Image (cartoon, rainbow over all chains, first blue to last red; front, side):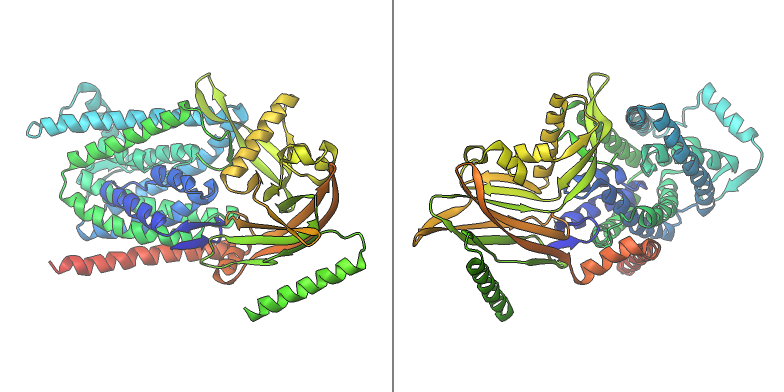
Length: 305
Length: 258
């Protein structure tokens, strides 16, 4: 069955967005990412204008992450205090990032810089997570390897003021740590035009030392608020949110997020990390191919990333 | 149904009267639609045109929207190997829909001047539209070609020979064409024009308007998105939050059972 999308101004077979929603929602519930890095290009491939694809995806993520946060909260895997602190940082970081884009555009060749940063970031994070999680899967019984540099960094973090306990995560940090790193992810996400889940998850795992299952729930919680903000701004300033497309996507993604959350409980933290790392690396390889193969069309609508 | 038939009868009668009034008229055209409505289940439509021309003339049928402008990202190689957006091109005088059908290739039946005057065929369209910035005539030609390719990819531009069927009728000949109307064409006013061509010149032409517009829920949502962005955004968010919680609750019940 085909339905007409009033803002995208195109017609689509309903099975496509429902199916895409289901698949990306599953990833959301499993790993605590929004999945925009998969959803946006796939929607564009199916004929949705780039600006509408990105804006409608954030509307859909509001539903998927509500569903996912709810599922993780029920089993006590959302650290609200940590989530709020990351959000404060992320909000400020987003504001700085938007100015950063203007600065890069003024310098010229901004697209090149942004694209290269994105590829290197994805590749670096993916590789690190992959190697680290394979290693920790091997040394299951041994205690975590701590090298000198790491403990110096940890000592530095411990020396900051405003130390507070994050009970759900079982860690103690200065409030400034999640705010600063949330801000850092916020800046990069705004500059690269992505949600930043794939950066936020590693930050929580490796810098904030949170257990993987709490990371997933808490990440979904802060993605929820980010996407509410983005959806409103897109609808208000660009008029690019397609309500019907969002409904079709969330029919799949809300269910997918629940299934993902249930399935995730059956997996160990290391297993989750290694699968997420593989997906991030696969996306990196796909982007590298896109960058090097001659495109079939040399013109494109503005607004994609 | 009945209304449609009455309408077509009236249209035909009107055309006949026109024919009587203008002694020179050698062409007539009846399109099967004068409006296309986009509702919730819209997946494109079809338009057929039928008419009479003098025997021995070629026929060109053009379906086009009004000229507009468009800004597109231009892809090119950076650092010798990487394809990415390298600039922005501004196009003007670009119809949002452009389909041309002819009984023989346009360059064989029309002089270039005549084709340019009526903007018939990709070559004439290429001269008709403007774009900037371009550095040379070759550069311009390249990007005009890319623009047409881009539009063909989204089913908005097309040019083909032989889709028009003709058959002799008394001393005249009848032409008929039935073509799919792409769902990608946005709402707006379009025109179907039939041209009778002989000796390299357009000897007669006739136009019929086609009005494409949104109705019902599609129109309501589309207007609200444009005119009331804040409320539309809040509704979209509320809907998503509600759906997320709703599905969460359903799964909790399902999960609690086992």
